[in-house]
Length: 144
Image 1: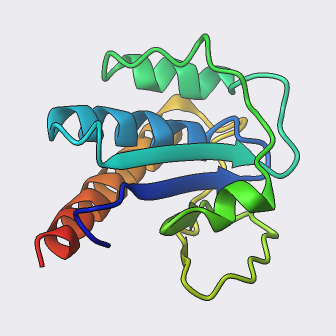
Image 2: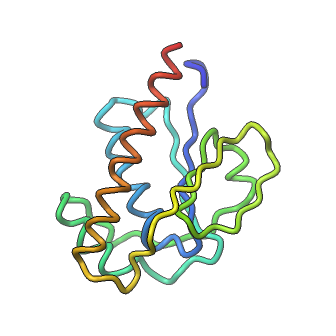
């Protein structure tokens, strides 16, 4: 990942209504905190998007003053994902990307849909740490 081109990060799950929405929100926050608006692009989507973000996900993200109530799950295309440098799947994806230069990582996270709020908070905290670690890694790689 070079300084010349933006790094594109993708966060994908089946419904784009829980884990990938949380990951995207944390990535957007991390990008802003680090002043990387011009050098990090973020893509999110699902292979079979739901109608809305899960209520329990909206609730637990409010703990971090992040409002997901207006977000709408969307379908992500293979073409979009093949433009990414890193694609994080949430443990539910059936993606098969052909591009060898894409770093695909399966974060193997529990689905928050229908879980109690304490369990969703555990999932959220795990996602937040993974996103921070990913940004640390991207920053280290771009500094080389």
